[in-house]
Length: 149
Image (cartoon, rainbow, N blue to C red):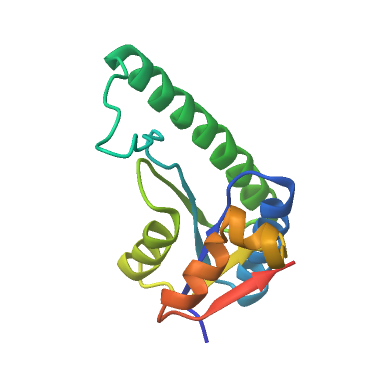
C-alpha cells in the first residue's frame, strides 16, 4: 500500500508518539521511512514599519548552530530507535523553513505515500494562539496524513 512513509517530529514527548507509531508501521509494512525535523528561521518581529534587522551575525550564527545541534540530537535518537527495530530510516533536517511546507515538500520529494505526525490535540483558543503545524499539513497535503495522539 505504501512504499515509503515520512515521519515528522519536533523532538517533544508528543512528537515521540508519532515517531514510535511511524517506525512500528514501517516495520509492520516492511518499508523504509524518512524522518524529518524542521527548524524555523530566526524570529524577526515587525516594529510596525519594517523588520528589526539589528541582530548581529554572531547572534544569528549561534541560533543556527543551536538549531542544528538540537535537530542532530533529535534525529540521532530516532535513528537509534529505527536501527533497534530493524527499520531502514533516512533522517533529514530542514533548517530555516516553514514547518508544514517543509514536511509536505520532503514527503513529495521522496515519493512518500503517507505522512505520520503527532498532534498535541489542542482546541479552541490554545490552538488559535499557538497554531497547529499538524493542521497546516492536513489542510495543504495531497499525500495522506496519519495523525497520532
